[in-house]
Amino acid sequence: MLLFLAVLAPLPLSAGDWSSLYDRSHLEAEKPRLRKALDYVLEHEIEPFLPEGQRVAFGLQQVDMPLPLALANPVSIYSKEGTIEFPLASMLFVEDLARAYSWLWTNRYSTKTVDEYLAMLRYRSASDFAGHRYPSPLVALHIPADALSDKKVVDLAVGTRRTAYAFLLLHEYAHIRLQSADAKTLKVEDSEERADEYALNTLENNSAPPTGLLPVMQSWLFLGAGNPAFEHAVTPRRLQAMAHYLDANVIEFVRGRPNALSSTDVIHSIALVLREEAELETVPGHIAALREFALRTDVESLKPRPLPRSTK
Ligand SMILES: [Zn+2]
Image (cartoon, protein in one colour):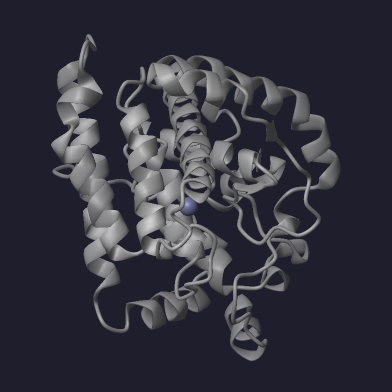
């Protein structure tokens, strides 16, 4: 039924308005908790790891959590007059994805369903879904209500959310620095890569493996598919650069950790996912195929799929 509706309905050609993902009242209720989470990341996950000369400047950086009426990118972060704006809906979307990934990883399910969900958000309109609203990640991906009763899932989800927030804040902070440092002539792709590198350079001294890179990069990749004007647009070269950075600096990322060996594996696995996405992006017709796939599929098909035994 949904399939027929999707074929007959006019398709959104550019990035959609995903504001139906979360109720305004829900976002307002979550604001104090998310503010605390954000402040924790600023104080404990970023500032101690910045080069000394930048710590004071970063400490003065204002970060607001606006409640936008229209959401043009579910993982949005931008700056306005020098203030970083991290919309509440984006913070919640990233947190939900972090929880979904962590539950899927811990229980050995494929995370391919996350990509498929993101492709559906990109190419389907809200009216294709129940109640004419886009389903939020935990609902669409059939994550059980008691997922957070498992401490392993919680620990992984918290680390994933923190490193995702830290990456986003550092990435946007780098954009502000680049703007003020006579680099306005930089091409978008170059400026995105430089912002990534700045963020990774700080994250590598941080206390958790940067699993948060996956929800962020996968979201930007799929939700911005075929739309070069998308905020923080992802290109194959950018994915390759990030994968290369992770592999080349793995020693920095795991230095001093009690579980350095498993952290090394995690970092190489993240690099591998990014590299595979980059290769897929260069396949001719990839975007058209992704769109076709998104139109054929529905929320029921996003039920967790066990990984084959031999695969990590
Ligand atoms: Zn960017």
